Every structure is written in structure tokens, then in C-alpha cells.
Image (tube, rainbow, N blue to C red):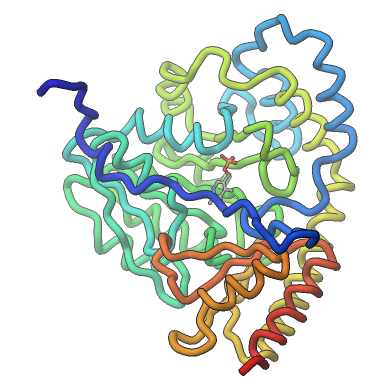
Length: 364
Ligand SMILES: *Cc1c(COP(=O)(O)O)cnc(C)c1O
């Protein structure tokens, strides 16, 4: 070979396509509802702390994110020694894949699971095994049926993006019990703060009582700090030890770390955002259903809307909404070519989407 050759698997990866950056008609106000960002921004306290941190940009961060691990520990009642922080949960997911997957291994994810999972799997030469879903929801039996001697890892977003559905904790426990002990179960709880269901749990109990389960989380969603790239995981000592050996020594910046501490301590901001999201999630689900479209029941900060395969298609709806400055997420690369995902926005944005969809459905 006359030029450098990427490792096995790398060129099989379909590049991740982020929520599109809006290009509306000139002069139109734009609402970006394509990346599950909060309409509220972060806690004002997080912003203050972030700006103050600008006074010392010459200093390296404290390498273990100690103050942030301690703040997370207080918020969730966890041992900070069992927490790792990262540059977004994306970094954590990639570190886990790098630590536990290699060529010849298999990792299982679900049909409409988060796209970072197959990328992290294949980047390490492992194969991505897809388990079908039932009603846009992870199907525990389908996952268990795909376990082979080569299986090393199972990715499960709970709630899932882009479907908005969740798996009750009893079912998560059944999954863990059905997986071989050497298979790592990764529970991605990016949207847990939006869930209010009695049968839902983040999975902390499983992580605390097993040596093969981790839970990942993020400051990008309800905490409104997506630009700063902060995620974390809670895991058993053996996994924390292994992952820390390959983690970059200064992987979380000081301003990000301090802003995240302030964000997680601002419980009023979190509760306000959760209550608002729940109210508008119910409203959007009801109003969009009334227009004759199907909406998958969501527990997260977005809703999945399904369009007919002919006539009023999702592609036409997407173009129509974009012209009106309402930017939703098309899901062709998630295996959902007839659906759009809408992030719950401000009251104004939510009302405009319903009005625009009403016009779209009524048009000849
Ligand atoms: C948004 C999201 C994350 C968060 O990713 P970050 O890298 O922390 O911004 C993780 N998992 C899922 C399923 C998500 O949708």
C-alpha cells in the first residue's frame, strides 16, 4: 500500500450527521428543534462561573474532574471514586468501546438506537449487531436472542433517542440477568431527567451491585451545556480503573467542570425545565395526533412524529417546516425514513410547529 490504511472497520462507518443547521427564508426567525437542546440554556449560575474561569486559562485543569465528580456524587448519592467525567458522553462511550471491544467482537444495539453506538463499535474493529425493536421500543428478548460467544457489549439508551421510548427497570434487570457476566451493559441515561414514570430508573442499583454494568449521563440536555462537552459515567471499580488508564489526562476543561458543578446544584432550574417539557410534550402529542399524524409516546424532551409513506410524506413536511424556520430532525440514517423528531422548544416554537403542520396537512 502506498498510503496509510485506516484500521479495520473505520471505513465501514457512515459518518455521523448532526441536526442540520437551519437555512430558512430570508428574514425569518429560526427555531432549531433538531438537536434536543434545551430552550432555556444553562443555569445562569453556570454561565457566571464559566465566565469567571476565564481569569485562569493558562492553568491545566485538575485531571480527575474531582470537584465535578463530588458534585455528581452529592446529587445522586454516589461514590465519586466510581465516577469518570469526559468531553461529552460521546467521549465516555468511545472510551468504553476502546477498552472492551476489538476485532472479532460483537456489540449489540437496537434498531433505532443512538448512532454513536455503531460508530464507537466499528471504530474498534468490532461488529455492530442490531436487535429489532417492538413499537419503537428496545425489545429485551430480541437483544438476548442476538447474544453469541462473540458478544462483548450491549448499548441501551434509556430513554432512547430518537424514539423517546423507555424500558421499565424490571426489564433492564431482566436484560442484565440474561446476559453473560463478561458482557458489558452500557445504560445511557442522557434523558433520564425528563422521565417521570414509576417504573423507570437510571440503573444505579445495577451498577452498584454488579461488575459489568455502567451508566452514562450528560450535561448536554437538561443542564443546557452541550457546547461545553461534559458527560460522565458511574461504574464498578474494575471498569473505572480500566477506562481511567486510557482517558486523556486533562479531558475536561476547568470552565466546563465548574459550570457543570453550578448546573447540577441548580435544582430549581432543572425542575422548571422538567415541568415545562412535560407540559409541552403532552400538548404536542395531543395536538399533532389531532392532525391525523401518529406520535410515539415519549418520556424525553422530544417527540417522534410519523408521516404517511405517500402524499404527506416526512420529506415534504420537513421542507415545508424548514421554509417556515422550524427545523426538525429527519431520521433516514436512523432507519426511520418516514418520521421526524421534534425537540420540544419554547411555547412560541411549539405552537408554530403545530400551526405549520396543520397548514401542511390541509394543503392540496
Ligand atoms: C444527546 C445524547 C447524549 C449526549 O451526548 P454528549 O456527548 O454528552 O453531548 C448521549 N446519548 C444519547 C442517546 C443522546 O441523545
